[in-house]
Length: 286
Image 1 (cartoon, rainbow, N blue to C red):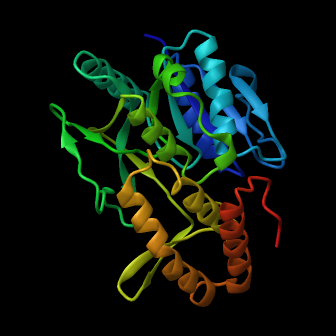
Image 2 (image 1 turned 120 degrees about the horizontal axis):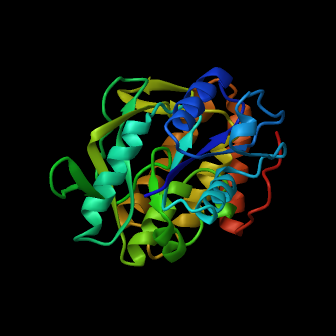
């Protein structure tokens, strides 16, 4: 069983990426790096793995597709997607693959991912609304998992299709999982494999509720993609209700509590407007 990993970069910590890449290469795991940074990363390992540089930033979905196609076309049976700020080991990859095989004997599977340890709270992330279903020892069937740590088979990639490049970044991972479910494939989470991961730039508590604080431009894609995905019949109803009703609250917090409120308001307005208009061109800068 040949395994590989895809790492998508955008202005990363080069030394962290170097350590991850070297560890996997030493374990005989081929690596594909797709770099969306304005300047190419200065890594000594670039000549040892597949490397593509997109200074114009083609988005995470397009980058993931490039890496997946490269590794699958070169004989990999399963490939893990990895963000630049996640920490995972070859043993984690091998254990996830073993669990993938175990599940495939009894259930159609699209992907499996690790449990996520949030770096901000140092606690395991758990869903607030959707249920998880036990599937044997240390494995649960879930509605969706994040892209980082997601292990996908070549068969599932062919059946479900590529990640949706038009979404660019936010919602890409969940949309693919929901599309897989529509095609009769399940998604799973491992409880025995735990991955440290950083989501967003910070957490801010407002009236007892934690809000993710990211770059203002991310709000454009978040608002646009909420409107876009809420139109689709295969997207879970709980996700639509939760995110649509949260739009006014998120607007108020980002506009009047977080720094750069005017800039944040601009991107939220543009994202909402383009979502309604079904406009998927590149975001207009503030």
